Length: 536
Image 1 (cartoon, rainbow, N blue to C red):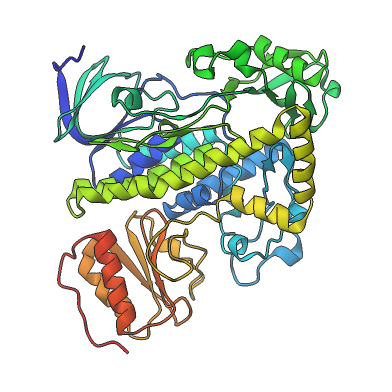
Image 2 (image 1 turned 120 degrees about the horizontal axis):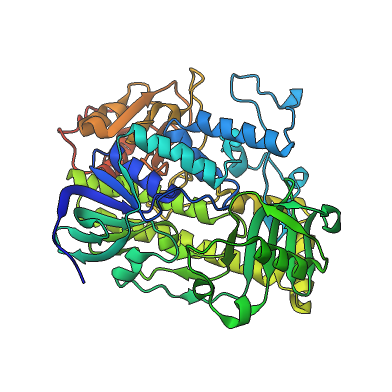
């Protein structure tokens, strides 16, 4: 029953869920000037083991908000912790003032670790995104701590121990029932995980494929680790991995998820994983009597349940992260996909709240993010198909392993996992349009993104007379312009989510006209009349 008493003060946006996705979204909204609060059912941060690293778009999202140094500190600490810090060779130290390269992370496909030595690191897609190499090994727990500090500095309240029990979209806002009373908010965004209460209460369908496997992830004290193989190992019951840090174990069992029960029904989301569960699973898949004596921190369980919300928006209720899509963790895509959702939605919803963009701008959120979500679901499904313990999957695994032993095959997989191939379907012929902005170095040794930590649009102008920047001045504080010496590309417009909305290799009247059209599409009506002096 919905309770409308004790209604709290209105806020523009309420974000449900204080994980990385909810925190990124809240920060982006705050940067846009919206009043926002985060509510979270857990009284304390989740200590369970989850994602162990981030991809390039996520690291670059941190970079665009001035958080790269903090992320780099986390990576240095993690490398020291696992004892795999690698010194930089002299021939890898750039001589132009840019950051030196650091150990490269490749990931794995279906448990087959990708050899960094086989990767063509000169590939244009990889070579254009190296500035964040020192900030990729950022585990989810450390990322949450970093983001919590970020939202605190922005003044965003995070209210823990508050669980959503009901919601009502009134057309001009949303009434949110919680155990503490009722909140009236302009917009509600569910970032509350795969079993999203917000999604369920909003009546949004969640179609997809059912789970076939059960997985566990833990760091444990092991009495006899010599009984385990290093790296990934397969058996008729499933697969497991021991490493790369001491005590870290991952198990995968293709058991129909314990007598056919869907993963969501097998355990309550509040039920902790026990030492006995992890040990039993590890013994089954390894075929040994290995003994675990203690868990270091909370272990986690997961499945390959793969689903995508029928819509990412229903009226004034929206979904992001696992609330919009779930899948197995193979390839480390889930956290990164969710952060991408938050970055895409944050500036758009902030623009609608601020009043300089029509509500229809939100339609582009589902249109742009849905294809990426569908790709991730299929990317993880493919890995499950390769990892099964049956003879057909084993034969397929041999074929894939052969492909991944080649330079082209490994480079392809690393590019997909790292996220550098992601592209949105935006209008424009320039090859940069729709892609995340690459490392664009300026004459003063800085990069373009170093000038855009405030969350707005960012324009690079390399025209001789500053024609692009002069035009963009009509959009006031929404667009920050950076001028530089002439080079190609001559002009680049970057949206707040890091996506290139427009780029040109030429100056002139036509280029200025194209830029104005793109600015009007994404940055709204100008606050003053654009200056249109003759160009070129």
